[in-house]
Image 1 (cartoon, rainbow, N blue to C red):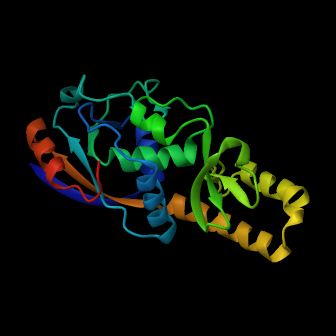
Image 2 (image 1 turned 90 degrees about the vertical axis):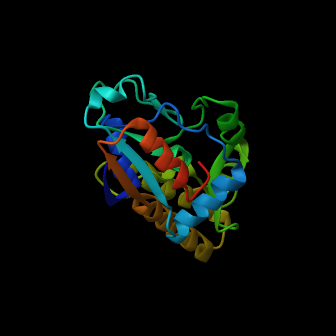
Length: 230
C-alpha cells in the first residue's frame, strides 16, 4: 500500500465530489452528530483551528469501487455525475457533509436519515448571530431577527469570494431592518459575516490517500485514524 498526504480546502474536495472523482464510501458510519457537535465544529472553522484528516481509498482498479460508493453527501445528490470515481472517502463523512450542508444547503433540503433530520430540521435554520458571535440554530421565522445571516447565504460564489446574493442582501438589510441597530453594530456584523465567509472558504482538511490497498486494509486504517467522531 502506498500512502500519501495532502492538504486541501473543503471547497476543492466538494468540487471533486461534484465531478465524481471522489465519492463517499457506502459502508461509512451513519451521520451521528447532534447540534452541539455541529456548533463546536463550526466554532473551530471560524477560529481557523485544525479540522483533522480525512481518508481516501484509491484502489489500483477504479472498477473495485463499483457498488462500493454512495451517491449522496448530506443533502447533496451526486447521482447526476457519470464519471467513474477514482477514490472513496472512508473517514470524515460527518465533517464534510456538515460543512457542505452549511455552505450549500437550503431550506427544504431533504434529510436522508432520522439523525440528519434531528439536526437539520426544516423548522429551524442555522444562522450566524452577532450577539452570540457565532452560529446558532433558531426557528425559521426568526432567522432574520436582529443581526443574523442564514448560513446558506455564506457560500462563496464560483468566481468571487462573496456571492452577489450575499452582497445584495447586506445592502438591502442596511436600508431596511438593520436601520434599528447602532451603526457600529451593523458595521461590526458585516465584517463578521465577511470573516465567516473567508473562514468557510478557507476551511482545510488533511487528506490521507491510500493507494492500491485492499478494501479491508483501508477500512482498518480509517477505523484507527479518527480525530473527530465520524
